[in-house]
Image (cartoon, rainbow, N blue to C red; front, side, top):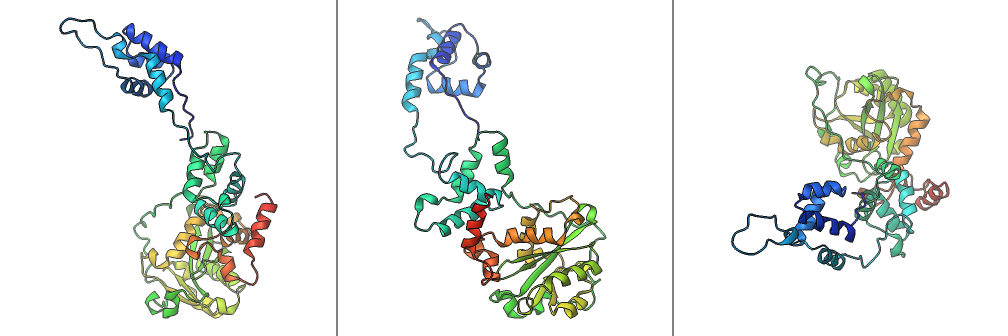
Length: 356
């Protein structure tokens, strides 16, 4: 997609007829016209061309296999489809620049569609579906702009590679409390304060960033780690959790990674009760797994994560927390987690004022 197709001209069709009469094969004619063989094949098929056969009985064979340039050109013009309505989303339209700004800010097409509907409820002409956004992007002519715009999209989730032999981490964490012993209110996700946690690791597992996601609001917190060890996790998670008010840090569900070996000390330092998911059961922490996939846009695999400061990680988390999410009815995590401190409309206006 994105390639502009040029219709055959009357001159090209006349050349096709002439060369067919000379006995030149269609593939050679296509090469001479700098056209693909499939283009010429469809042109001949649509216009009654028949491959010459040995003559049986009286009569002269049809010239050029029955292909007539003038009739073919008239048919092509009659079949040319003219769209009744011009595309609403294409370069130069009123929606194009706002959509590009949202894409550059990290919004997905679905988030853009939901945001436009929320911001412009009474202006249908300033709303668009996410399918239309995808179609407009991939219909762009090939070039640097198209490459840049597609680069702003978040593509499919990476596949999970199976853990190598000898890397099983069960049985190495003392006094674990199972996920099955969590209070019912954690599962129901009605009250903010219950988190899921994990590490995103860098190249060769030598660097890491801690990720915490609140289950009810999807609010995300990132923590700088000195390494992927238990002491680093204790220090990093304690620092960011203690920045959150106590009534919104009640529990943490984690996998059985060795970095959580000091979970009892984490509870003492923060008041957060830690529960552990079953081995090899990432779906029990699905919110965190999904968020880690989104974060890979900013923390790519194979990169050194030790260079990120806590301030830079806070800025990355803020980008996720100020994006509308479909599962939240296109509200932002920050809008739900800190309703008194975040105004979505004010943030939306600032986003455009800065030209993002």
